[in-house]
Picture 1: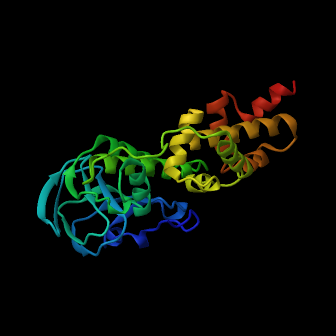
Picture 2: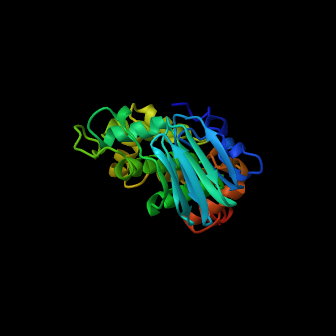
Picture 3: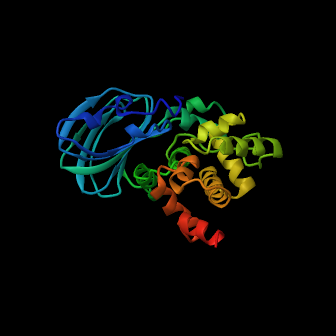
Length: 303
C-alpha cells in the first residue's frame, strides 16, 4: 500500500468527480491520506461508463431523494435513494451509472490493501479472496456515521487526524467484511485481540515520542514494531485503553506542558515542537484537555 507521503488522490479513483458541472467543496487530495480518499460535492445529472479500479467505492447521499440507475455485470437496477442511502461499488468492477437529479454526496474510496488486511484478522482463509457485494440505495447507520467522521476529519488540522482517519478506514473495512461481504466471519488462529507485550508497546510509544513534531499515521506507528495497522490498533486499545490517535494527542499535550513548565520557549514554538498546526490549534486542544490555555497554565506555574 502506498505510504502516507504518496497520498490517495482523485486520479486513482473512477474519476466520477471530474464530470462536467460537478462542484467539489472539500477533498482529501491535499492531506496525504493513504488508506482512503474522501470528497464532498454537488453532483449534477449525468450518465457515464467507468472502468474498474482496485479500491472499494462507497457513495453516501447527503440529501435527496435522487434517482440512480446502474448497470453492472450482474444486472441493472434503478432506485429512488433518500438521504442517508448509499451506493457501494466493489473494486475490480466496471459499471454504468445515471443520476437523475442534482445531489450532494460524500464519496469514499477504501484501499483494497486495507480491506484485505482487516479481512485477514476476521476470516479464515486467503483474505485476497474477500468479495464485497455491490449495493444500490441501502442504508447502514454505522457506515454513515464512520463516513461522516472521515468528512469531519478533513476539516481538522490536528496532526492526529491522519492516524484517526486510518483508524476509521479500518473500522469501515471491518463493517464491510462483517455485513456486506460474501464471506462469513470464522475463528482464526492467533492472538488478534491480545494485549501488546512490554517491548513492542514501549517501542511504539518511543516511536510516537520521537516523532511528535510531525504528522504520524497509523501504518507508520504499526510498522515501527512490525505489526499490521489493524492488529496494532486493536492490541494497543486493549493494552492502553485508548486508540493510538488519542494516546498520540495525550503525548503532545504532555510535551507541551513540560515545555511550558521548564523552558521559556514561546507558545508558538511550543506548538510547533509538539506537532500542532499552529498556536491556535494547540490552545484549543490544550484547553479541551487541561481546562485552561497554555499561556494561563504557564502563568499560574510562575506566580
